[in-house]
Amino acid sequence: MIPLAADVDRLPPYPLDLDDRQRERVDRLLSGTVVSLHDHPVRLPDPLTPESWAEYGESGTEHLGHAGLERSGLDVVLASSLAEPDQERLLRWARRMRDGLAATADGPVILPALEDLGSIGTDLDGITALYEAGIRSAGLVYNAGNPLGGGLGQPVDGGLTPLGRRAVTEMNRLGMLVDLSHVGDRTSVEAAAAGEAPVVISHAGARALWPSPRMKPDDVLRAVADTSGVVGVEAAPGSTRVKGNPEHDLDAVMAHVEYIAELVGVDHVGLGPDTFFGDHTALYAAAGWAPQPVPGHEGLALPGYVSGMENPAEAPRNAAGWLVRHGWTDADIAKILGGNARRVLDAVLR
Image (cartoon, rainbow, N blue to C red):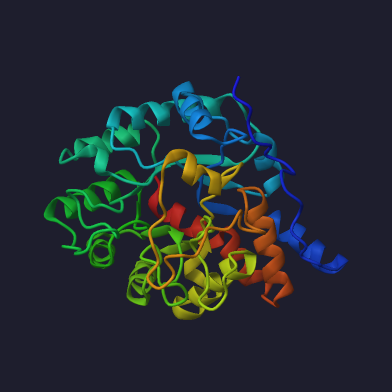
C-alpha cells in the first residue's frame, strides 16, 4: 500500500483575515457555480520520491481526493491526465477515471481532460476514440509541438497545420473543448480563429506580469476572449509569479486574475489552478521534470508550495476570500469562480 498525502488539512490554513460578514459572503459565493478548468484532484504519494512515484504510476489506480473535493465548494473539475504520448495508456486512464467516478455520488462532477493531443499522431479518428472514452477537453499541442501545430517550448512556432485545422473542426463537432494552455503563440491565435466554438486556456497566466513562455501574451489572451472563451489562471509552483516579487503565493496568482480581467474583461477569466493533493514541488524532482527556464530569472528556486493555492480544495475558497477582501462585487466573483467556465462548457459540450 502506497502512503498517500492527506487531502484535508495537509498544511496550515492560509490567513485571509476576513471578518464575519466577509466569511458569510465567501460561503454564499461557494454555494453557487464553482469550476476548476484544470486540476489533478488526486492524492500523491507521501513522502514523494522517485521510487514512490514510480510505484504510484505502476499501480494503475487513480487516488481521488474525495474528502478534500467534498469540502472545496467545487461543482465541476476538469481533471487532467499528465502529458502522455501513448494513446492506449490515455484511453485506459480515461476509462479508469470514469469507472472510479461511477462508484461515488459525492463531490463535484469530474470531466476527464488531456494536456496534449500528440498521442493521436496524424490519425484524427483518435480524437473520436478519446471522446468515446470520456475525454471532454484536450490540449491541442504540448510544449514540444506535434503534427497539429507548434508548442510553446519550440524556438519557432510554425503555426496551426492543415491537420490541426481539421482537428479543431472535429473537436467542435464532437463537443470537446479546445485547450491552448501549452500551445505556441502563433498556433494559439490561429487555432482560436479556426473554430466555431469558444476555446479555453485552462491553466496559464499573463506574460506581461511574468516573462515565462508558459504565460500568455496579450494578443493570445485577446484571441481567446474573442471566441467568447475563458482563461483559467494557474497556480503550479513557479508559474504565475509577478516581476519584482520573488514570492509565489495567493497574491501573485490573483494579480494575474486582475490583469486578465482588466485586459479582456471579467467575462473571460476563471481559475485553473493545476494543483494536486500532495507535494507538487517534490513531484518535479521525483518525476525528473524541469520547469521551463524564465529569461532573466534562471536561478530562481521553486517555492516549497504556493501559499493559499496549494491544492484543488483550497484554491477556490481562498480565491473567493481574496476577491471579497479586495472589493470585488459578488457578480464578478461569481463569474471568476465558475460562471464564465460554465458558460463555455454549456456552449461546447454535447
